[in-house]
Length: 392
Image 1 (spheres, rainbow, N blue to C red):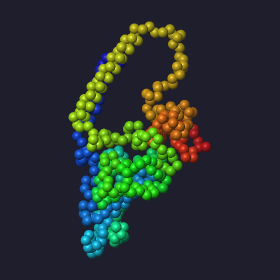
Image 2 (cartoon, rainbow, N blue to C red; image 1 turned 90 degrees about the vertical axis):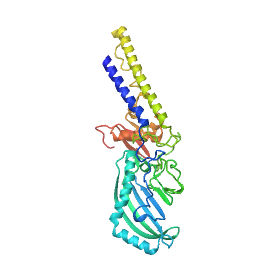
Image 3 (cartoon, rainbow, N blue to C red; image 1 turned 120 degrees about the vertical axis):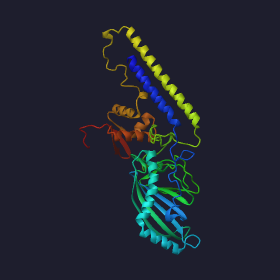
């Protein structure tokens, strides 16, 4: 590379360094609270319209295998003279039934605000559909006669799916759960909990967990629930975070994870400045090293031609060392070394990765058509695609 090219590269690295240095001191996201978390709903969902006097709110989330979810939101009213009389309930029930579309539209608008925040955090295109409302009477509220207004709707791509693994909760991180409100997650029978939910639930049954608003306050990275298909190895013996995916997933919104105990803004500015100086210094060192190598190569005589014959890689190294390869390249190299086919569990052992990290890398390779994945019994098998391959 000539002198002009080297200085052009140095300028590019300086610009990149400035950009990186400025990221930590950027203004916080509009609407974020003092701790950095953006509440999913800015107000108590019971404090709007005709639903203001609900005694309890129950939000049931049925997670589907494809990552979508069916939401059932129940507003419950104790029917007695102290809370709501039978006459008041009858009037409210009649109004809802006669104006069902208007009530459904209001509820959809409220949840679409939550969905928009979820799209920004997860970088997944989501959608609400099939919003409906109904009314009923039961005895679910402390064994008393109860009036119930129920909204149901579908939320697409609510959870993240990777082969036989489902992670749910990131779409509603920091969700505000008022008192007298419960949130329940349920999942398909074919799945089971991979690790302890975060935060710990206040209630649990086979195939479901729940949090009570009177005892739970979600942080910016909560709630989190990770599920694995039954019969797959869901152990986490390494002690690593099951959400770890190689460092490129948890910040898909482009913002660092916000915590209430993070460094203050002046320290972030100092860290950015130091990173900038390190970038410039590294660029200068690289250019100087290139110049020294070029001068040294030009001054030394070339070895005899008979001593430089092509040895076809006689040093035993086929390609760059593993530490210079990406995660995807390491899996592909391992496949080539094994003749084009390997069990996913062997990849975990050979590369000393966690199940979660291996699943993430394999999922990306499969989506890019770099590999094919099929099952033999309860195990995933990876193979390199071949043009003439036919089913056996």
